[in-house]
Length: 396
Image (cartoon, rainbow, N blue to C red; front, top):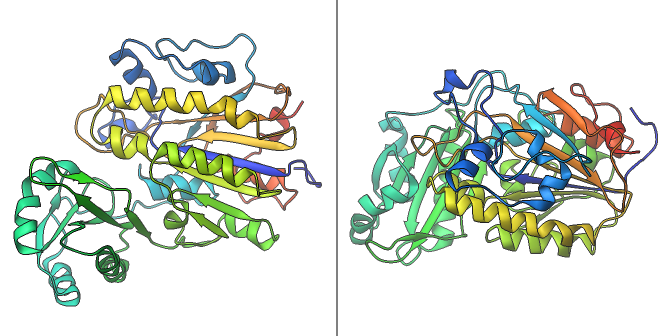
């Protein structure tokens, strides 16, 4: 553990759902054989990701078209989740040092009628659905009835999530967000992980969800490394849904985005004004647009787009800037169903300039919280309670 500050800025980018192979306990989750990167690469006939390849991505799983690099420019590892579950909240919290021993509750039979009744009463609108469903399928099924009645479409998934869909011309966004705040209070009684506002537009047969989505997560039950950074007066800038996932705890600035491309543009813009601290980015399109919808071709295009962004990112970082690329769970677009998959996730780390990593191959790391420990090490903070820093392997 470093006693001095080795790094000025850390850019932590979560490629939401980009898993790299089934975890050892994946069968318990019904996910045996899942491999987001590997399976989709074979499905589309191969990927071309030259920049990620140069960083060592091809060493983490068998990715068609992306072999290992003889002289990787980054340090690479597979992170193995310690927490129970395979959802967004659990994954992000563990990246920030908080491990959950018990999974958030799920509701395969729908939410309790007593809860739905209170939601109707407090919001003044009826409820359609109240069942597990794909977000796009349920719009096709219940969207027309919603346009007629104005009732909220309420649904869940294999995750601990209470989702509320409403057409933007029927329910104004402020009203939908207030309904989510009401639902959040009701969900607290059941320890439900997230409430998600799912606004949509369009007509029957052509409904489309918008980027006016909002997440309302439970606050973390304990302090995370984000709180430690803020306690040391270091900025923590969240790009994408980071603020939502942590209920604002430990995040000093929130930048809303409308998809991956917008998120990447905001990342570059934020770097121009951030002289120190953490830039914490979530790129949601991999998961929301392509993983859940089981669209391997779309997922592949999003990976190619991100790979093309990396040279631009390098123009804005120096040798005292650490970049960590990782994920929060898997969502294999070739797999059965529409839900997340229990997978190991990549960790690729590099610093700016022409600096080569001291030890590129970091193996399999037990727990996502090595990221939290690395943040503490980078900024000269006291060691986190769990995890090992990868910084000594990244720096020459």
